[in-house]
Amino acid sequence: MFKDLDPILHSQLRLAVISLLISVKEAEFTFIKEKTNSSAGNLSVQINKLKEAGYIDVTKQFRDNYPLTMCRITPEGITAFEKYVNALQSYMKL
Image (cartoon, rainbow, N blue to C red; front, top):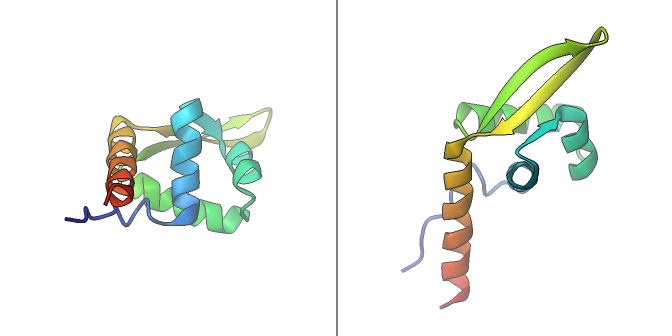
């Protein structure tokens, strides 16, 4: 009757990161940190969990001698988000 909710996306911050990346496809770590109002340490941990799940790709590089971390949603991340939203919608229809 009730669909299982993806435990990776059921975290508020991870869901916020995926929701943000759904709309922009790719974003800098600092942009995500600003938009989610999270600490750098907590965001780093949650981004790592999303990366390990295959929901985002993370690339680290330098821009003008400053570290730059870019996050991009993967096709698996898009699918997981869509399934999560559909599961939530099924809860509301009962």
